[in-house]
Length: 191
Image (cartoon, rainbow, N blue to C red; front, top):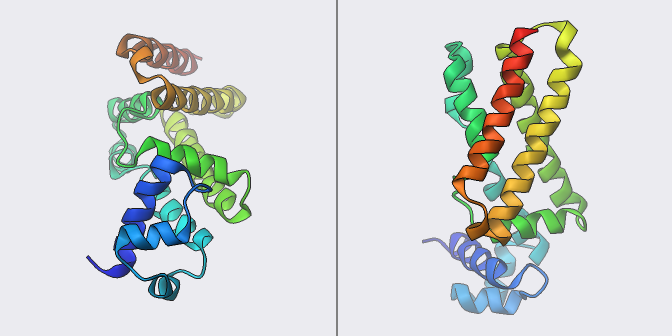
């Protein structure tokens, strides 16, 4: 594994365990078996390490090819399935603790906030496109927008609960939330 990758892996692990602000450069260097001077050849500051992790980890949240394929094929069941998975937040390749740190850091760092906003906007655009495909028409555009906000809010809440109280958020509760959104989609389609 190359030096830069070792630093990022060690930093991600430390950030998950200790948070961004409780993890220093010296500790990252020690954990990655890299001299501090070498670390600074790859990263000008700890914020640059944070940014590299944020960019990589937040890209895990970009809509996958499944939604694109479903939209291209006009596969309504596939589109609904993607929306359900988005709400459920069951799958993540990134440690949720690091993601929570990323969101907290977004309130302090304009660079991190910009990346998070970009990802948020990407999901919002995908949800709008998905709902427009399922329930087209200008007459219901405002209701579609409200449903997008509902889905984004529910997903954020589910994510937070999975992070802080995973044993208290049963699949039955998540299924109820997904079912509620699916009913709202059905109501849009019927109008």
